[in-house]
Length: 304
Image 1 (cartoon, rainbow, N blue to C red):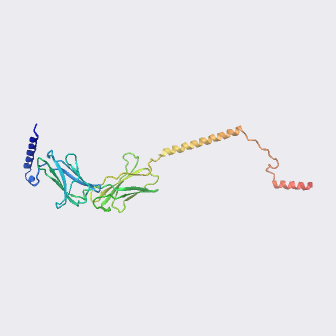
Image 2: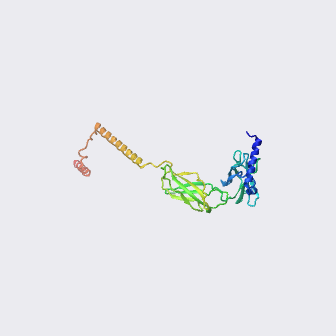
Image 3: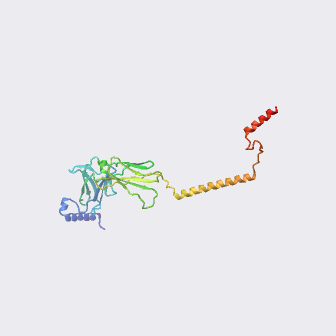
């Protein structure tokens, strides 16, 4: 088994061989071929931070360590990475303070090793084009008896953007629907007011609306906003259930009325009504009360 000194000597010979094989490029970019970081990408997110990530070079030595620096286009140092990502080897960087960034920046990832020189990796970025848009916020839904209106606020961005730079996509889906029955999404062009009105007569079933933002200058789209529910959360009552309910109530009412009538008839049979004593004279419909009164007065006078 080789000693640590022998292993270090082998790594040094390997780096020297790679340097010799790299030729003129090694003179221009000092370091072993394949030792530089690879796939360096950076993006601005949450309107306030930037994250850069990269991979370890395929021929990098075991004790490799990477460092990130940001310069302007004239080569002036703007900042070094304040917080690295990764366990033992730096494979990313997160920057929370972007006040020194300009529209175009030069990002460089250098390497360090005790065994050989490491190539550097660099890219030039347009900070306006690497920003990942945040979803729209402050989403609300207001409804009347016939329509609903969805409103939202423009996403917060690090670079300066106006309403003319945005387009939106509105997704309104009904809750508790069968798979494959989704409603189509609606695209909204740049408007001073961020709103979408659509017909929705009451009572309306439960719906969920979400919105995402896009940059009209590119194919960049934000993630979808959290869903906002509106309408009734309970599913509509099926027509068959309504019909059965009405029929059941009608039958119960008819049955109750029938039992009440039957009971009344039985009471009448057990306790028949006693006939009243009638006055043959006053109860006779053919006798006129006025005529009867005059006759009685006439008889009284004759008797006197």
